[in-house]
Length: 210
Image (tube, rainbow, N blue to C red; front, side, top):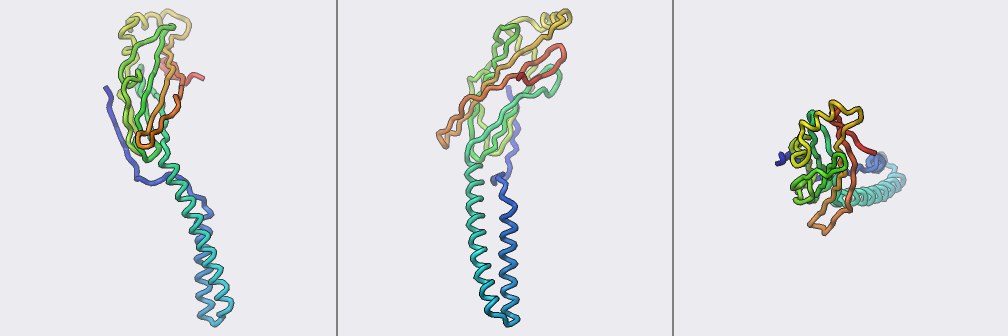
């Protein structure tokens, strides 16, 4: 039912380190170089003081660098997943999942589509019946789901098309999407995330419903 595309990135953190860490390290290195030059010129006392200063500055920079690197590694290890649906072709929808962390996650989704107040049945992943595993730093998506597929056990697509032609009001399929995920390695499960969309059949347009 689904096509799958995974694009793993390098297993490194996307955490942005502060720009001043590089600047401070460069300053410490410059101070050390200056101390060596002064020593060569016979200015031992000044050079010694600058050497001590360079050593202290270098140690502080390395401590800060280690601290921020550990924060970045911790952030990448924490499960973080985003979900959304899109309209890749006319009269279709498609889900997308992005795993922004370096741990495996299992994802669930319920689209809960309704038309004219009536629930339209779905199956498997889109009904919350089957999890979808997503590898670290990966993106997966489902196959195009044609809108007429939602009406397999409801009004026929011909009836819907006739309603679109004759009705002056908007003809919409509403989605009350529930999405959640877990990281088995961490024993972590997210709270249910809810998103609302509607598909305007007359305008052939998927819209985020605020």
